[in-house]
Image (cartoon, rainbow, N blue to C red; front, side, top):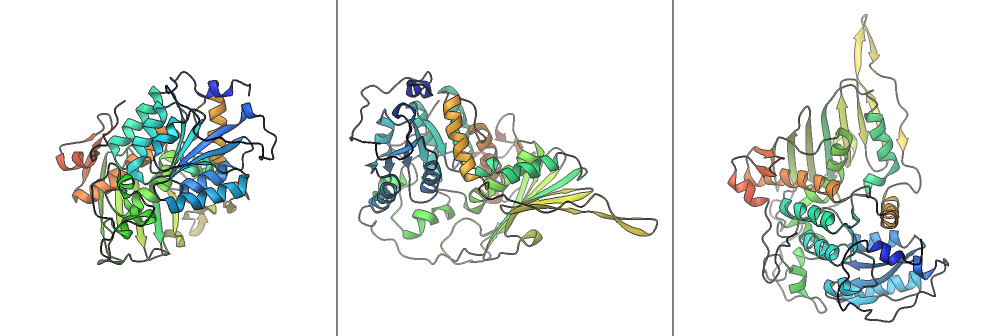
Length: 445
């Protein structure tokens, strides 16, 4: 890269008037010898969970500098600042309000690791501010927000990588190549599942004041105003509709994405779902702990299923994707992929309908996250589209939301992808919309 790298990264976007560096920083302690003009400055918004995992992966790249951390929980913020300083030798600037990160003209890109209900607003504002964006999955907490985010990435010509990192995993790609070889025969059904036996019940506890150091109003942001409850905070926000979509949008986007990728499809024609709180019927969660959803695409069906408190899912795996063909079935998870040939009978003797395939295990260092963050940085430099850009990321998120909406309406719903709406179902169409609490407003692009 040339000394004009920062101007190149900004592309044709308009710089924020009056933006200035608010805290002095030095990168001299970084050991890799990367020229200052070639460094890529990263800010992290939401650094408690995957936001910090993404940053840890990014910091393995010599040109990446973490210059800012933002979190509404001061306890998390101070802890992560110490972690970054220990790793890099430099303490980043610390913010409680994500808008201050976006105002910093020295920041090239942001990682958005906040709860799902924040993703859309922060991503759109980051694009407006001329930042490239690595946004955690699921892309957003509603179908409407996903559509807005795709439009923002296009309008502001930003590099946007959605954190469905399996798109960059080598063994996932190898499995898809085998799937497309045709050796499995015609694929009639795909299955994707997550059986999470590590998830305990969440006991009902009373509301309480927010902990010291937590800006709870900012944590809620556009979500409905509710009293603070520890059950709905940090990791467990996933199990409440105000902020997320349960296991369907947590694990589902990863695995449904592989089905869409492998079968080269975008949207189903219909979805029906059934489930409920069968593992822990009296605990505090709102989203179903047990769910099955059947999606009908043009010439195959997909079955999504999840369950908590159980670890033995299909094919004796707690998560995975299966492509079931006339000649055999390919099964893949984060550790390996393998093929189970179908059997038949010829001249009264059994035979395999396809040649056996050795089990293919993930190669060391090629699981996916590091490749995904590296792909993001490479695309920032070249201004090309990353492995899971906004358009790809929204496909998995929309499909996951479709399953949740079918469950919540307790109906078979029909999706018109061309119009991006449900056919003759007002309740379902209402559930695809976002409803923001004032003073926050749904962004327009």
